[in-house]
Length: 134
View 1 (cartoon, rainbow, N blue to C red):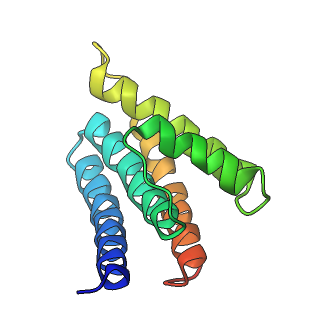
View 2 (cartoon, helix red, strand yellow; view 1 turned 180 degrees about the vertical axis):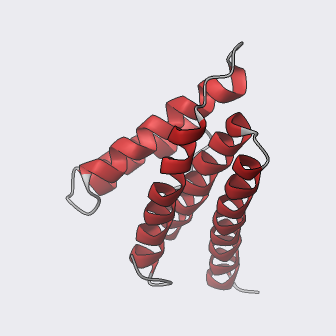
């Protein structure tokens, strides 16, 4: 496998993980585990965004690096709407609170509303990659 094929394989893996995370978010919410659903919503967006950034030659070790790159390379250039970036930022924070907070913080209605927004975010990343429509 040449380097380009390896890159495409990793990108496909990240996008598959994004899709599976969206499905898991719906499942976790249906099972009444809203904090776990928040985690999956965030990771769906993270995986899709990471796939796009990787395609553009950008690799990161930390989640904050991915988030910063989104703002620098997608929002500031006008490629990604501020609304979708704000959603990502909110999920970044919500996931941290849901994973590490000492009380349940994820309201069912909020998570239910976040899932379709995450679907739009993932679809937008796929559109940028040329693998789907927004």
